[in-house]
Length: 185
Image (cartoon, rainbow, N blue to C red; front, side, top):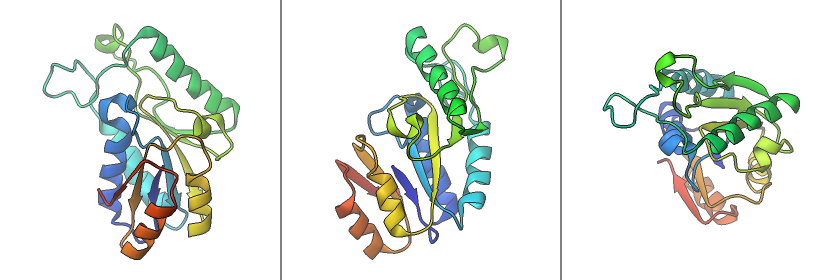
């Protein structure tokens, strides 16, 4: 889980949350694949987050202008694309991405656009590890709900918190079912 509280530094949270999920094409055991955002800042946060995701340059990993390369295999590419269909079938809203890029130069590789999906905690995309450039977004009302959402899955090797309240941060770090917790980074 990657939790953005109402008092978070939004530009920092957007950049950090994007790195958390899109580094290594989301193929990392510590990827921030579940974004949990306070409802009072969700629209502002998502406007910036979606814009950043859409600006990520896909391409050859050996090209210094590339920001995100392909997935590891055809099988994995198909698996990640299947989760997009699962999200749609469960009523998730694709906010950005959700497909292989149309550019001819990328068609030979296993690329997927950075994908952002609005989802509920009970949705498969919030319960299973997609392991790609795919993040589910869930809104929360208060700290208790944020913690319940964050701990509401079997996965949680790493977690991120974005808040100006260090007392809250330490309380959450202790309560999260996570192997490690990053605070504002």
